[in-house]
Amino acid sequence: MIFFGVLTLVTILILGAGYQWLTHPIHPHGPALDLTVEPGTKPRGVVQAVSDTGAKTSADLLFFWFRLSGQARFIKAGSYEITNTTTPRSLLLMLTRGEESLRTVTLVEGWNFRQLRQALAKADQLKQDSKGLSDSELMSQLGRSGMHPEGRFYPDNYTYAKGASDLAVLKRALKSMDSHLAQAWANKSPLSPLKSSEEALILASIVEKETGKAADRPLIAGVFANRLRIGMRLQTDPTVIYGLGASFDGNLRRADLRTDTPYNTYTRAGLPPTPIAMPGKAAMAAAVQPASTPALYFVAKGDGSSHFSNSLSEHNRAVNRYQRGQGAQDSPVSGQ
Image 1 (spheres, one colour):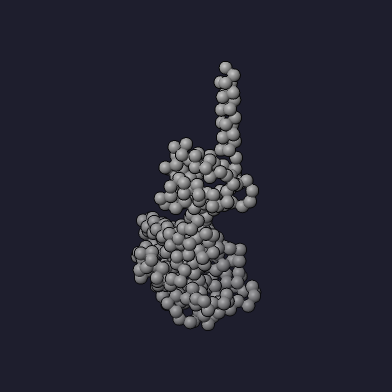
Image 2 (cartoon, one colour):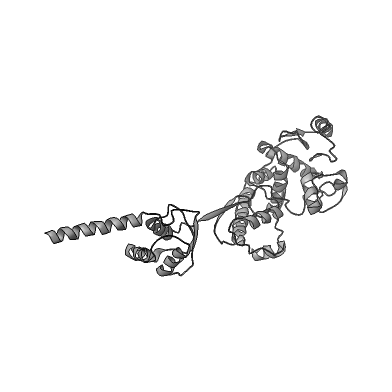
């Protein structure tokens, strides 16, 4: 009886110590540790990878725990983080569920492709496979050889695992834009003079850049739709600025409006040849569902909203009211 009593006590102590080990953090202090599990790694290799991070735990006990649990064969490859709350038990759960450590990069509505590439280049732990590629080479890598990249990527928050390729993020953004554009085009209003989804994307990018207040988007699209319908030039400053490229110094001058480029909608009729930025969902919806309005002009009021006018004389009065006397502005307002 004494022997069995001692054996029971020893068993309890062992089990208690085991439970304490299972629930004790393996990295109680310091910043999170990065753990990478390569595809095809055996349980012993996973344990070695954990040890290589600097985590403070017994490799033998960890291997024994992996095998004893019966879950070792379900460990998934990926990028993980060992934090100050990660225990042997939670570690195995994280690895078998594939709960990778994810980062996020945000692509902002209204950004051009140059800004998009800059954001990806600065993204944390994102592999720069597109570095050194020209825009055309990059599009070829994405399977869109010959396509201009501007406006082709949907602005959104994109999560990725440590070490993921920037090309993978771009592919997701590209497919997302395809999907959103197709959905918008399927809902095109009879009021829209646009002839293709390509034109819708171009106009949406202009609406995106011209809109300071969300509620104005359909009205701004309505103005541009009216102008396209009657063959009136769009005369929108953002397209001119885009055409100037890197030479634009932040001050749009009258001389710039007279300098012809493929994107100068003061010197050329119709839409520019490509989008000028990444439009969001609301801008695409406005482009294909413009407001029914007699307005042919609009001018920024200075508070983010716009004043809409049906005639040039009314527009000129609005310009005098909202734009004159606001400093030495050398360019007319958009929509003139």
